Image (cartoon, one colour):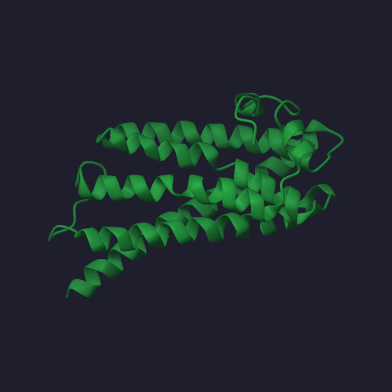
Length: 199
């Protein structure tokens, strides 16, 4: 993906998106070269937060979490993210029925891979061990992800009217919110299992 044009994708229906569509990366290439590396950021930062600044952002476990336990939770989060992107692509493809368009799985996967980029990057805020900073950054990331969704569905789904893009984008965004909360549940379950195994 052309990182030079990436900022334009937040406000343009064409710039950046057309380049991406012209390259037309395969699902496997996009997954291996973009989704897998970007998905590493949140688990790595959660790991950092739990081990280096315990209790600053996430509640501190008592007794203190071990490195092995933290790695286990991070791996669970990483695998859940990878699965979620693939699942979201399938869901996005089905949502196309709302605007009477059924995109290819490849096009749906492009949107599923690009849209969470701000959320992946927002995890870097954990370098600042202050909870409210993380909350603000995540909120801004959600706005940015929404912008990518609304501007991405128009070219990727080859829609003929921006109004359809808004309808389609709303459905995709709602689904994305559910997926994001599901990831938080996975992280919470992983931590609960760790605490449970201690007993």
